[in-house]
Image 1: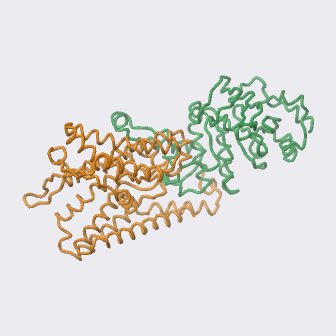
Image 2 (image 1 turned 30 degrees about the horizontal axis):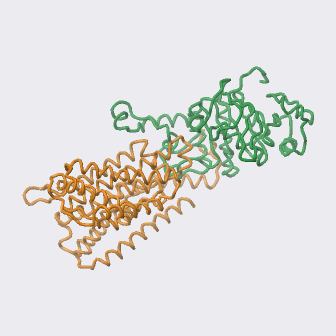
Image 3 (image 1 turned 90 degrees about the vertical axis):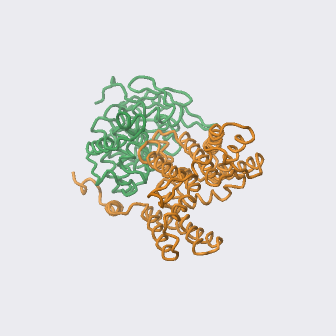
Length: 275
Length: 340
């Protein structure tokens, strides 16, 4: 799979973002390849969430370019990102508790009835949405009792499952998972992680932001390590153990200066020096 | 794949499914207000012979037409987790403007009415823009707008004027009879209230806009992240509420035959009372128009029934206050139960 010529699905080059005197992103690069789960890790203040916000359209970087399937894209709002087929799942269970599962899945993308009822009366096609939502859930083998139950009747893990299913249904290119299990217990997390694997196996690449190292190692195909506003290394979990990765992440182990700029996907020059 | 395999059996998940199962048998949320309305009706029927007559019940409906219209707008706003303290004053301004344009400026009645409705809509629009663009709390914005509209009304006119010279003003106060010669008389205004309730119910239940109104009150951040233009949505809610307040002004003119600069000073609390008694949550995202209609009728029936029993009106205020606190307490407790 280490094909150097493969075009990244989502790529960023030289992203810079400054907040006053603070430089959150200092020329960071990023690349996500097809059918992989790429974990993004970094200490607090490493620019991890700023990077993710730039990729999901939640903020506009000061410098640098973002490429989607090799083409430059400008993601100025989360809606831009969604239009480009990039969906984001947030850590804080971004669902509306009082709305039911179908309504949550189609929130902001409702289907209207055909003909006069839809175009003039703007009536929703609840049957169609129920049918589609049921199909999405079945695709992910995500079993739920009844699709018209309010989301507040679900457990935290099931709620996040709804958010994942929604993203999987609408994402054409990328799903970004921003700490998807941070608000969940251990067992609940397991269910969501299983869903993330299924999403990847169905062909969608996933960006996983997580603080949870065992989770990262269990799930990720590659790990992007962010430090001081830059990508300092990309490693494969089978090549390194957790403490080595944490050492790179925190700077306890230094990476030679001349390697920092030449980091390429699957090319673990920098980290192999230390391995 | 079965449930047990897919879902790790945490207690929370078990509770969730139990809750879901219970929800299947749960009564619709308007059951409480409906039961309260029927109990109150039963009580007053036992207390007074004059209560359960067509004429009296028609009167109750007529009495709640104005506050009911205001409460529809208030419901939309409270569903978004907002609040509107300015509605009664917006209504007062629109009716005074209508009368002024018609009597002093000699504009045709329909033109004056349209101007009054537009002015009310503009007030709502201003509320919405201040709340979304300056990120001010709805409570403060609409409290300020309450004072502004109150002052503008008084600056424009301080006298109560008769306004019965045109069929346009009196139409909604006129009656039609159901049930032959001795049947019950209903006003066209009562019909308009029912029609407005139905339309709002339809929009809230059956259109994206309506579902978004619920979503934004329920979880504004999730709604924004879902790509919904939440500011635009909120502005549209406040503007539509403004239009409903204008219609309430027209209904008030039709009912009383006058334009009164003193009108509407307690309407904000009365409309909030109706909304809350109807089971709509002040925290947003939960509630219904049918509930609000029932809530308005509960207040109307209490006022009417207590009057028939000869209870002084100050006690009616007392009882209404107790009812409101009870209704909010029920909402708070049930919400706590859900979250816990």
